[in-house]
Image 1 (cartoon, rainbow, N blue to C red):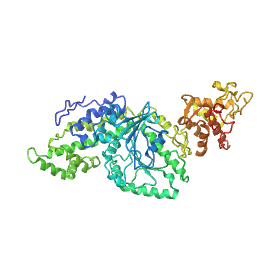
Image 2 (cartoon, rainbow, N blue to C red):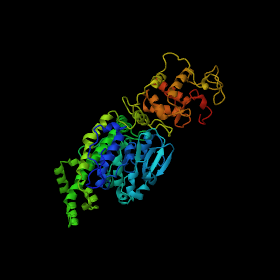
Image 3 (tube, helix red, strand yellow):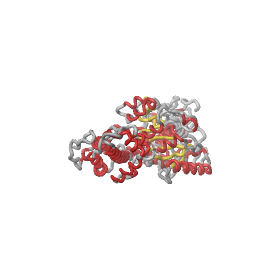
Image 4 (cartoon, rainbow, N blue to C red):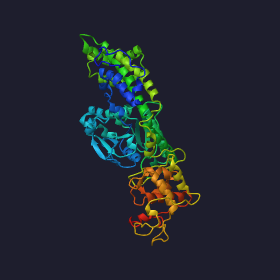
Length: 605
């Protein structure tokens, strides 16, 4: 096995190459990448002090970390509301308001219990991928925290909320840490970077411009979201979009600007609805991108490691060339100053001598600044054997590794379907709706997208329940509450019995309730209730418009707890079926629609 030396210019322990079939020893792409990094890349980085010029040395936890989504933008552009929209609920430590409310970096992660973990604890935790943040010191770590909560989406993603980038006079205030440096650290590890703009705040401050500029090299990750687009009419939106594209073109210094999504990502009705169809399509594309993040996690790790190897190779050649240019005895300080001043010429010589791609070279000014803190005469000589071994990672090892796992395209097997269910559903055809599923009591907001296709036994039962059977179905075995004699919450007899028990009968027949119970039980109720995320795909198969389905949810969630029990679910299915048949929804529940178990338990009923 290849065992490189860590001393400068020393002979490596063994010149024997690794076996060509080494990849068969790995359990996954991630395991293979960790092995290749430890054996062939990390020695070069440590030898030439890569971590002091660019990014810190990586650990196994950096490879094992869940995919990360980084949100950036000026204050009050809707970053925190966007996270709340995706999760469908509040998260610990969130603050939402028109003023600059989020004053710290928040890593929103999955946890068995809701809690907030301070930044210093996260940075020293061996199981967290944040150890590299220690280099920013206590000034930053006091403004960093982890927010943990139970969420299906967060089982597969980590979302990072950031403070609003300052503008105007405020950007001259010292934060106590480098905002640009921290954003650069997160950007290097993020799988997607979302730049959020408010339709009324298109100006790009100096600090925001500096943040965007450090995203160069991560262009494939960057997406732009024009949020709160419903606050302007169609004509104004056209002008706003044009102004945003013009501003982005100047900052990115490229004729091709990254993808811009237009929408309004919160659970409030649209103010201007003439662009609703456009918002639907934009939502579809953004949700698809988010859904595919875990699916492509392994490929993303390979891509990031390849970029790192290319930069490390150039860095080794630069350090070796600079060391060779230094005198052996006298005039070292003068020569170093001369090399720093002529760094552009040094880059050109290294490029020509070694035929290295120009695009692999670092920013010359940043490299000069980092190099000025080092004594070039103490750099190790160029170690060709180490660098050649690292080159094999690109030319041989990674291609063979990917051949071993041609189907590993996501973080865990089957995760794509789970993420798709946790996210607001992605449109696949006609435009439907989405919105926060739990915690707010309002399943459907006014943004519409198509529900994912339901497969398996649930699909057939849901379709049957929505459209109705061709002939009366036999009553299936259900809960004892529907055996025709069980008392209701008010002590009345079952409404499906011979009499009305002194109260109004229920509009849902016993056979309908039996069908709805079958569908309800397939949704894995917890504590006798199902969340909005579980209910949503079933109801959306009706292809009813946004307003109708929102009204269905409001009427069905009788106790306003953001969940549906068996009776409330049956009511929702009944109302959807009626709407599909062209019947108008009632403004409020009539007595015969109120589930018997809810009569007398909710004051307004």
